[in-house]
Image 1 (tube, rainbow, N blue to C red):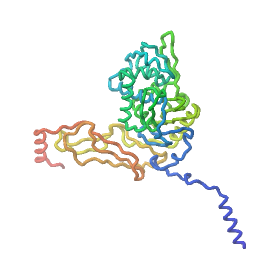
Image 2 (image 1 turned 90 degrees about the vertical axis):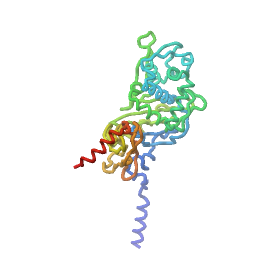
Image 3 (image 1 turned 180 degrees about the vertical axis):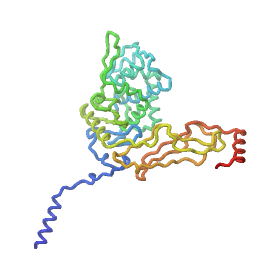
Image 4 (image 1 turned 90 degrees about the horizontal axis):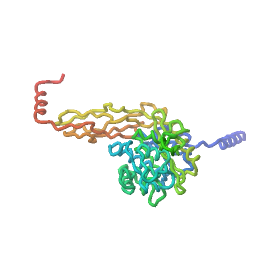
Length: 399
């Protein structure tokens, strides 16, 4: 009888204990593994969201990230990208003057109130787009770069296809409500990542206030529509958006201790919720993740023999800093790498030619891979070079 009472009491005690969820014992591997990040209550009020590391493109958290939604003024991320690319290619200068057309001046919504025939520099218009979300400034830049907004929109869609963005179609350059104009949190994050390759862009997106027409009788005070650049440590962009259809949207970026993050939320109910949820996403990633360096830019990774080339070997060097995103506290020994390149190459080798790849693993599981390209060209050797190389082997023996 005593044994039966003890057994009954033990069972009652077990039943009274709280049931700890399995997710409490989350896998502590990298972000590519199923981890607590995918089960966190992040961006709960957003219709769609994503959080990525800008350097590697690793997705840390996502919620319906491929859902096609109206992006409102986040559209201007692509407008700014094409502007920065035009500057980089020498087709446009920051000092170039742009004359506002009557069409550009007629844009409603957020604007810098361009007058028909008014001149501004590309630099000033970029401020107007990045900080004030100027619809008129966006059209003025589009017309300067492509001649017409329609031609510029075609460029936007072409660039989206080049970037492999399958959830996006643009119908204008500023995000004002229009048919057949949509994107996704995923695609906007990829555009934002591409835009951030131009370091100068954060001069515009990260400024909290500035002026246009400062030396005139009608100075125009610019205050950034993205309040995170003032109130969140490390935030320096990128673009807000709002229409009654799209609700409150934000493509944001912040950088701390060498780690740059990109967060995108679409369809938030109000500005406060939008900013709070993006801040929470950033807080989570900064507290839990870090970049693990693999190679520095310019560092030699390996060598490949070249047959019948002016040079007998091709050095493979990192074209940029190579890193992977890992959970803080990950043992360095858990990260390994494998160089996958051919044993020999036949000359000629063209600069930029894809030679192979570097695959990085964590605990034996592939994390990411880096494409390796020839940093320089190697021409096919002439007969005299080949003759000297052949005869040198006849008379000299390596020690």
